[in-house]
Image (cartoon, rainbow, N blue to C red):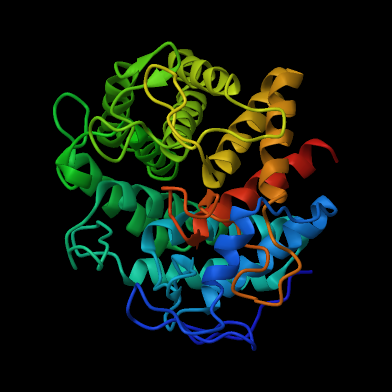
Length: 397
């Protein structure tokens, strides 16, 4: 159903485009930079098509993102300033899960192959101490959040294949994570700016998933400590310490990470207090959803809108959460919010362009110069869009 493209040159554009220069401020004629900026500046929208067409185009783009790098990871995404970016380990971890889902849902052998290929590569790039590093920052120093996201991929790969290498990788990754946790339950070491982040509840969730395939009371206790610390950051549905930088209003992207961590962890543990925190936060963000599905890209910890652009990535992640809550509660307000937020994303997903580096992809922000992943199409935006539409389809099947 979803044919895999040939492997691409890392800077491949459509046949009528040329690659950008290495200088971030200079662009050769024919690059998509001005066209994409002008498109958003004049308020252009794409023609809404059948939901299946939007899904199919997104899947094809995600496969192109995997084919765009010389290794077996998934490209960070496409930048209109410089073309395809190198593989991104963190998000490749949970993109492997999406490929496994696509393989099952559509009996798609190409997605199954990609899921295995990416999962094998993630084993190859794991550090000796079990962590996952980002070579763009420090070549061999593990990062807590990145390790947690790849851990989710290891666990799913083990469940799908039964291969011990994936379980062993998961055990080593989670053990490293537990070793970096501070006594109060927050991760500070090996984090962005060495500060705690509430969105690391998503890392706690990954550790609980590991506990299911290789039970370990130390790992479960560490995850609970982080979740308890996170509960202390929540007030009236909004989170402190949830932005990338202290004092900044968090993106809906990181807010959704925190909510999903609480929601999935609460369900795995049978702990209502974690799930209740997720519901309070999901309900709070509902108040910000405009009639057309636009949501402010940042919402501060007092619940105030803090951006004039929409973080499309966050829209997709929040839609997944609302759809999951609709499944468990039957409340139509969750289904309505998910449909509207995804509708806004589809209105800004270009299915008509001849540029295969852009067709079907989801921007980080709308307009494209918004401060979340500006001027780019990050792979995880499209990944979460696919996840949300798959869940929507399942609900309405």
